[in-house]
Image (cartoon, rainbow, N blue to C red; front, side, top):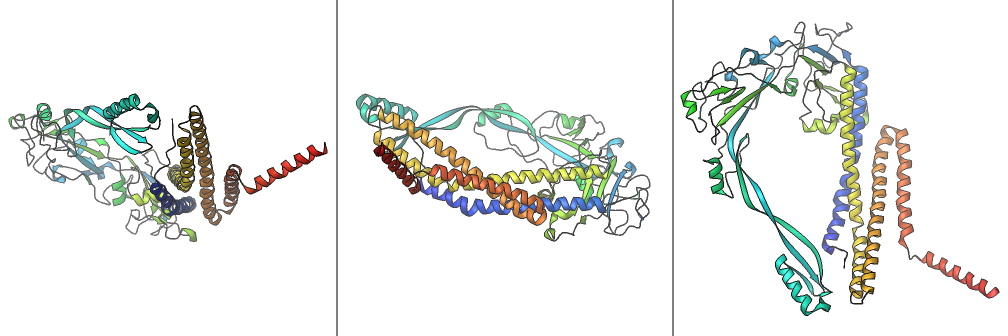
Length: 527
């Protein structure tokens, strides 16, 4: 027969306290903050759309319409990039490669930024076959005990043979399974990070990988190198240049061609990476610089990627530095409720990767853009889409926090009813036929209770969530706030109606039943 898991009283109290004291306040603050930031960001984008001026690619003394430019002016610029102003990279730009000459082909040496990826051959251990160790939780009227599955089956068979009547009081509650690996596999892999040097199957690793040291990759360079701020300029007259933040935002994804070079005798006999790379202990295969012809542990493979944009689009404040945008961007400061908010900042550049800064992503959303963005409406559409995506994602998080917190508050009700139904199951278990019928009815009852509490907690969560949104929108957009207030009241009223309808056993219902019974008796007497 089944039974309801009422949970430990301590865990029920912890769940209640966590929901009321931690999760619910967090949901209140987080939801309110999200609505404020989203609306402030929308206002800032609307202000940018109205106040931005178009800039001239050929000069930086006035805007495209001839108006004078002053530091702090919000401007929009979309121009081609002069590839002749790119930085010419060589081995000297990467620590550890200074002894390598003629590393890059002429076509691949010029870029706005370049990154180097260093990987080494290592031995990877994975589980190829595992077994599941099951344990049987036996709960009887005398107490609880955990035994292995084989022992549990043996004990159960013995009890069924000797004490079949008593065994009916023993219920197998649950089975847990713990996976345990019994066979390991090993393979050589090319990894940039360091894999574990500890192996469960040491002999198997040695058979597959030979020397299995998994050494730390040689520190031979930085992850990326950028051109200097102000070096990369636009077309046609080098009037505008990319600042440091714009160079950092460039997506580095284009492959870099290396000058072909065959392996020497030193490389052919190498079985690990040398401490210092030079022309004699490295060779080029395809677009990779290698230290070994094989895949022995520790051998290196080095590849390069670059950023070489053909067009740049930017929206931000004109800097006091001639021909550059301000690194800190432009601030919209007209709305008092948004004073000091990072969401007011306008500073966007394309092409760029998703915003890497956590504060930017929290306030502005995260979305990449490419060289196809050439107009201000297109750029603003991307920024608004990023704000909307972030807003709805955070709204979902806030709502589920409300729902879970309120569900924790209802947990004592579910546990109390579960305890009562379990007592009814235990009290009627020894009665033939009656016990199984009661058990079935209590299971149905508890299923209904869980469903009702789930719906009620959902309605309460929607009501609280919309109430917080209403407060923020009343301040920022009153009409929308009033409409949401009506919806919030409807959900709160619905939750209250559900609780009132299913509470049962009230004195009012009892008195109504007695009045109806007295009226029925009076009608019978009159007849």
